[in-house]
Image (cartoon, rainbow, N blue to C red; front, side, top):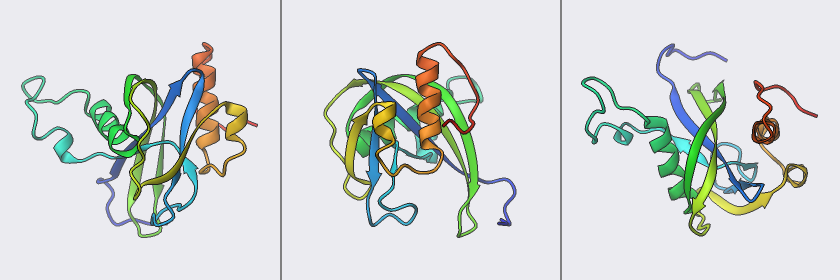
Length: 164
């Protein structure tokens, strides 16, 4: 695949939310343009409003913009609050329409609230163990990210790879 724009990427951030040793997964609404009906983790695209409307943290920069975006997206999509955001991995793709995307995948602790799905985003959710996640039609790569988080929670660090 090719893209004419070599510099500007759609930036998205996703969160593997951990609660009582289980992971939150959501099923993408059937009306979604990309991957309808597939299971994934919540998240979404970064918007310039995630920082432009705020005072800068230093003379030139806004800090914690990805964390702020992830908190907003998780709240919008599933209605809960998160805390203790940590980086897991990243991925890039060029979608069929030629749009390049960079996705930053993080893990976070559940911090409160009840799950309230945004219907145009997700139509089902589940809190699953790593083993239970295998029973859902996950987007390619998500299971491997869940394994990375499980390992990280157990003190083992790794970069993304296929886990069997």
